[in-house]
Amino acid sequence: MGEILVGALARGRDAFRREAWSEARSLLAEADRESPLDADDLERLATAAHLVGEDAASLDALTRGHHAFLERGDAIAAARLAVWMTFSMFERPALQAQAAGWLARARRLFDDCGHDCAERGFLLCAEALGRARANDFAGASALFGQAVELGTRFKDRDVLALARHGQGRVLLYQNKLTEGFTMLDEVMVSVTCGEVHPIISGLVYCSVLSACHDLFDMRRAKEWTTALTAWCDAHPDMLFRGECLVRRSEMLQLEGAWDEALAEAEQACARLHAGSPVRDAGTSAQRAAELYRLRGEFQKADEQYRRASQAGRNPQPGLALLRLAQGQIEAADIAIRRELQEKRSPAVRAEVLRAAVEILLAANDVAASRTAADELARTAAHVDAPFLRGASAAASAAVALAEHDANAALGLLRDASIIWRELDAPYEIARVRELTGLAYRQLGDEEGAQLELEAAADTFERLGAKPDAARVSSVITAAAPTAHGPLTGRELEVLRLIASGKTNRAIAEDLAISEKTVARHVSNILTKLDLPSRSAATAYAYTRNLV
Image 1 (cartoon, one colour):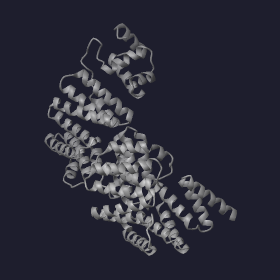
Image 2: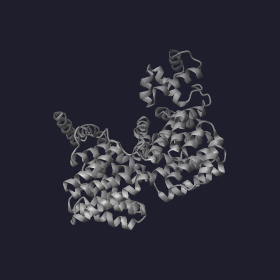
Image 3: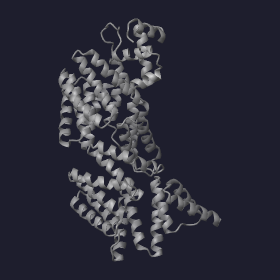
Image 4: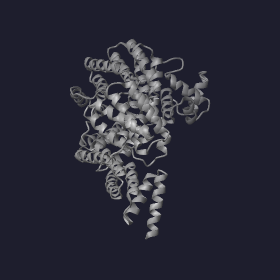
């Protein structure tokens, strides 16, 4: 039996050293069942369990490790674990009294030691977080500053990263955005370089993503997510907290990686358990619902919106947009008007306004949609974040089109297109191209309209945005007959490539569209020209000198 114990313990320690958290958690737990672990190994077990999302097991190991350190006479280590107990409980409304108790115990232990140490910096950060939550930003800043001084004096990178991150967040709370993000960016450099403990790395990364979301800085969030790809790949079994997974999913969706975004959202839903904070379950379900809605999987979207609601998360405006996509315009209209009456955070309010423009236009209430678009524009001007400015410009353009002012719409759409291309956001670019096509059509430029609408439809189909692709396809009509027949510009391109002998796959590669889109174009060509086959289409092209 002793040989088994030594083997599991030794392998568990080795897995921990390699940062193979799931393996370390399993092996250390196995060793602990055979014979209680000592204080150091209990701390390792607590860390591994936390990183793979087993919070109850982590809290149990922290508690036991704390008492083991006390029995060993190491009050500093015991106090350190008490602080981490506090951090673990902070996010759980039902454990606030316990969190306060553990914080008080950690403070007493450090005070009884009678000397400064790096670990006291963690206590200062926990106390500062409490001050920040009470809107005592001056007090929080002072405590974070003391923690920075300790981290610098003892050359402790973990304390420095946590404290400087706190200083950056306090600056953001005080609306000192440039200074705050500058400090957070510096801390993120230490994260990407692997200089700090994985728990702190995950905490800082998730906090930065949350800050970027709240302040509409999608460019910064996307840049750091990309920079951390290698770090995340090196920790495949590390569970990010629920909100962090949600923000990562948003970034993947923005850049057009919808399958990966959905996988991230589904992972968040699957890996959350009864011991997780309820709000994490709500945000995860909401994120999955949004992607299901965009992909046209309406039943799944409906189920996830309901789960979000049951977990205490407001499912709007996504649920109203789902009803709109299902053709239930009246239900969507009622829901979004009610939501407009509620007070929300700036980030949520902007989402509501953007959805309101779309829904109110579908309900033919142009005046109300103009009011919503104007409020969104004022918010965008105040915040001055590219993402919000792009969303506002596109929303205002949609209203301008409804007001039959195509020229004004085109100016706004040019602005939106520049922003979305800088952010490399294909879905948003496609929505702008759809509106641009409608503007061209309003001005009588049918060929220009066809090109824009077809490009939008191609992108929607490639992303898997089935409802959007279907909507655009329904408004793509043949241009006025010309010498080349009733084909659109893109269909003419496809016909020429067919006549040159290219397969659907080769045509898709040449035109940077999906094979499914090519197949649709081929079907349209044969139908419009009343031709039985590709061979007949080739002959048609040659007899009319189209090749």
